Image 1 (tube, one colour):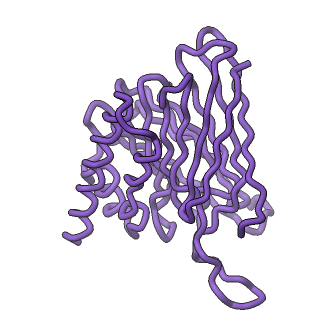
Image 2 (cartoon, each protein chain N blue to C red):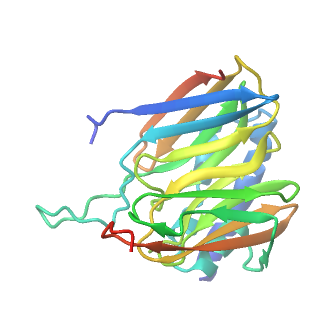
Length: 107
Length: 156
């Protein structure tokens, strides 16, 4: 489990004083309901529980995710009062305690 | 049931307090994590999930909320859903799928810094409604959209 790549992609564009943010987190998001076809054993649940978006250090959006969120979850939202060069920080943590943080600048 | 509700109420209250505390910069985001509403995500019925995530099942259908999802999803493992809320003071947007083992898919706690609009991708076990539950100004508003899931990928 530990050798998985941890990655996040964040893109954000500013327009008219606001910004559109799009992000993809690469994560397998196992529900815990699926069975391994080879062994017949259940694959343990492994999913992101919480993802926090910070804009210039201030939390703007908290995503509470459950196993019902698709693999490699995608997220998009509109940020008010944002401008080019602002920093955006996304951090997540999953039910097995793994976590990752990524930063991006608004273009 | 009572037990679940109690745990949940504690969880929500804790979440509320922590959110306030976080915005005031008193706590690090790491602390917020403890508030992940386990009971809401483990709930097996829409009612329980609603109660757990929003504290009530009394939600009014609203034209201010819109759910954008494909009419036919060829692959239930990835269904793109957009929820838009025009309601003032949107605090929380949750996405529920009644036919899933655990109806609550995701819940977004928004702040005044973002528009009432979120896009995400969810899993759907089979053809079902996608319910958006929005908490705005202390009220609960909903909207739904049926999505047909065809696993065969023939678009039928």
